[in-house]
Image (cartoon, rainbow, N blue to C red; front, top):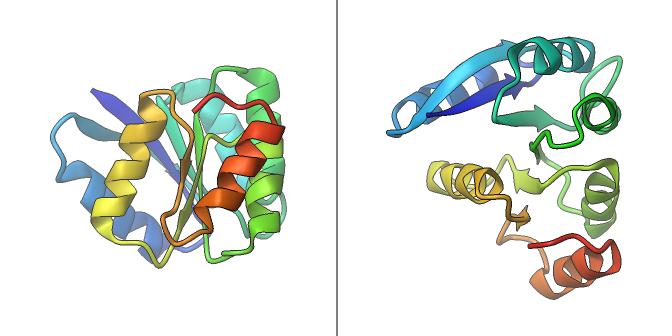
Length: 145
């Protein structure tokens, strides 16, 4: 069973994501957090398989929280969820230690594809992004896909 920690500062979005994840066999919710600070704390105590985290949150944002989580737990798998479709954000996300980059405009099925990919230790990037530029970034950073 894959356990997911859902992190977003919007409660309605957290609940929606949880409903989607719970509907898929083999997946469960480990917990939820409304801030980057709570994400760091809960990632350490709950040890979820994947942390699905918003980038833009008040206080410690998703990028800073990803760095902190990866320092505590180098094998932690973080899938960032965002409205930002800029390739520069993708680079920054992967530099911070994220294993995936999903857009909030992607479909429910794409969310689950992203979670499956990250769970399988693959690098994931939304299909709405420029795939050749993403491949270049992944190669430059020496990430294994």
